[in-house]
Length: 450
Image (tube, rainbow, N blue to C red; front, side):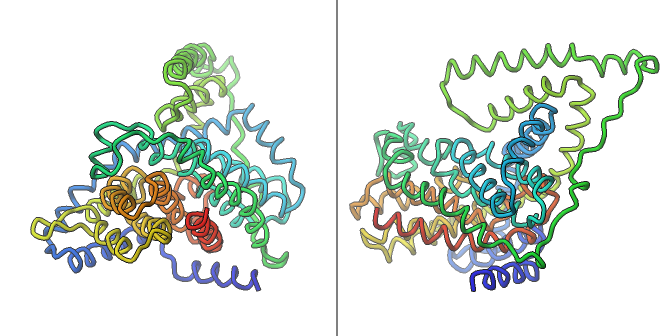
């Protein structure tokens, strides 16, 4: 029965889910229309919100492109490939491979979401080379599904914003939270760790149970995943420029400079990871581990091919965020605010964490950014939670889990993994629907009763 339901979801997604770019356009049109209906704004006002937000994710888009490129390049360094192969040699069956990639991805995403975005796909590709008869689509989907835990982890933007305190926190929560809230009450709270633990240990089993029957498995020829053989000119035929490109000296000098800053950064800031320092580490570690500028540049060129979706689609999602958060000059309403307020109005003290979670999941479709979502929902949900007697940490983590939850079926965050795997969104999203339903049940029950 379970496999039949899984197959039905996979078939439905394959048939009806458009390319992620078209998905972003459809969402844009939906928000454009519903924004006018529910906030009373005219077409031109919505277009101005859309155009005003269109380029606001440029820096983030570049960061995400570099996550893909630098992570992929580092993983293709000879020594990293060697250890990835060793790690991929541990699972011997398709079921074991699915479990292994889910656990690795979830653990990595909980530590740092930028690192988690690439490691699952890279490990899945290596598993596909070594484990026979494993479904490649499910392997990549499992490697992405563990990403759901990122916002409950130590790089989650919402709990970190709570821990920072200050005037900005009081402002964004409309005075509901004035003092900093320790991560002991959010990330390391019992209810959050229990939810994370249940997902960490049971989602891999759910993913394994989805593996198709042997005659329905879609595999990939391991030869298609092999990297091109390196072409090295004989020294006698090298020009001075060729010799410079194939010399390790420059790589070592600039690499050591970069890693020196990394050491300085952690001494000054502790283990505080963000996208910039993750990309910085990946970049300079890759320069050193590839040995020569030529090998590094070839790896970068190969990795950059997967960034097309990020470059094209992120501006459209930034425009979506602009329309979702754009406030009417006459009614004072924004579409994101309308959604959040609707859930607040039907909540009690018991159900409020659940409805905060669900509303965040809906808003996340259109505002797929943790920081952006916090800015949209915190002014509404945090005061409402305080009025109902719900602890601020519980309300905030409900928003955080909701933000992460619908990423499972939102192509925005899957783009780096899909770029690495060479697949389309419709190849994995059918499996992700099952993971969404299961994890949604676990998180909902945990938020209400723990």
